[in-house]
Length: 220
Image (cartoon, rainbow, N blue to C red; front, side):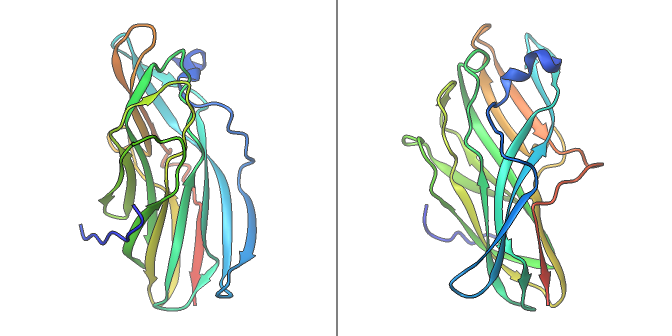
């Protein structure tokens, strides 16, 4: 869990199937100076999703579903410099009226621009019991995953993703939600419905026409 891993490699009436109580303002940004005198930006961003689930065999849209993420990265980086990025997802609370339990949790993040991903690790988390988490690499996306079973109505916090990267010679490094479609989700779980007892996916991705950026690190 603490070692670096190196890789090459429906409608609003059912919106309660998603998470509630995430009230952090969108795009609130603060800066702090680290012990290494690197100016870092911490951005808390509310991500709006295109969302759906399946109920009694029928795909149902979920309107207005959002989640909060807090991401920390340097405001600037030296050409070819190495630095860290941290992704922190808000705690997860699956509404028990619609989620008896859930599994196959996925949270996708993206680091793009003139950058090379050197390694990554998971850090922290709370109320996870013995749940195992790992990171799946998919191009510029890093997906935090768990195949453990979590009970609906019990809040838990997935581990933070800490990534070590190397900047290129110029340009910028950006962070954002990963994923691109229901087939390639940004946020996902597989749930047992409390009422009908059926297992169905809860799928979310960011509208490509309205992309979301967490942080931008300028090189130079």
